[in-house]
Amino acid sequence: QVYFVASGGGVVQPGGSLTLSCEISIRGLSLYSMAWYRQEPGKQRELIAAATSSGTTRYADSVRGRFTISRNNAENKAYLQMNALKSEDTAVYFCNTEEYGSQDVGWGQGTQVTVSS
Image (tube, rainbow, N blue to C red):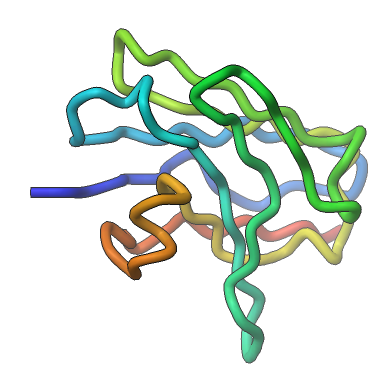
């Protein structure tokens, strides 16, 4: 069974920080490109950060410089450190591998992040 469980969301003030965690069920995580996505109400889910199997990271322009993706293959976990949060970061955040995500497999419920004063 493939699952990715995102947690750590909450309500934070603008300028604040949160760290999201992802629990992953698949084996051989090191072979996959780990990614974080988010979805705002009424919009499509978008990829915002990815960490490939070779260690390369990439970010959406909207979060570059503020968010940091990391992964722990041995513990089957991934993280998203979010700093300098803005109201426009309010969304449901999901974790998945790019490989499974592109096949629409493994989507969990996500975790809600609300940035509001």
